[in-house]
Length: 273
Image 1 (spheres, one colour):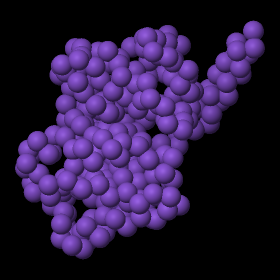
Image 2 (cartoon, rainbow, N blue to C red; image 1 turned 90 degrees about the horizontal axis):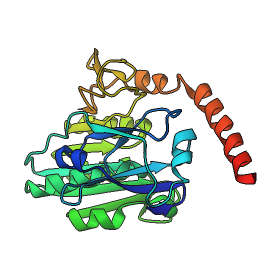
Image 3 (cartoon, one colour; image 1 turned 180 degrees about the vertical axis):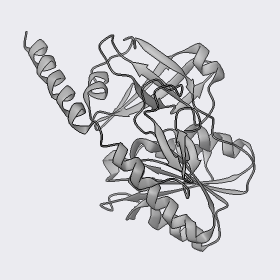
Image 4 (tube, rainbow, N blue to C red; image 1 turned 90 degrees about the vertical axis):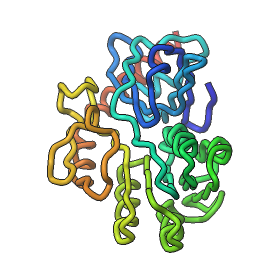
């Protein structure tokens, strides 16, 4: 496990999943019998070693609980691979746009597009240099890597759409693939729309079972209700109703905050014993 500020990387032994998983898919994990089920994108897949890699930011109850894990610890349930793989083909020039730790699942996608003979440019964005991840890994598999940070501590001072606009103005992009916070993916889609460049986004809405039964992950795409877990997670960014998506993401904010606060009390109490 490699640590960044509040960001944790896990390599999980899961040979059956690693054997079948493809770039763009995800798993759902549960870390204990009282825990919630959370979807996590695949940050890497190693079929030969029988491992998958996951990256999380410690922001809530389950991800903070995961941050206490050490080498050799167990995850109770790992269900996957789930969702549809990213469609990989030779299209020409591909721009992969990642925001925050959304850069991680772009790594296996970058390798796959490059293997198909595409010219791959990665545009990586973070609030600051300290939160920039996977830069060296992406440089190893991409033709070019452009970095943006909000504070200018690394690369171009600005946001990912600034760098993407420059590439689009140069007519150097045939396909955009974006993964990151919904607001970032929304503006990436709005940026590419006037240029008529196909834009794929990976959605990670509220999800429970991951197999299409609960309906919690429903999203509105092109005026139709779709399930991110079985129809996605990849969708046409120009057709997603971003306002509905972001509104639904806030439904359980108070419940999540309450659960997190209760866990912190229990955890701090156990640490003092």
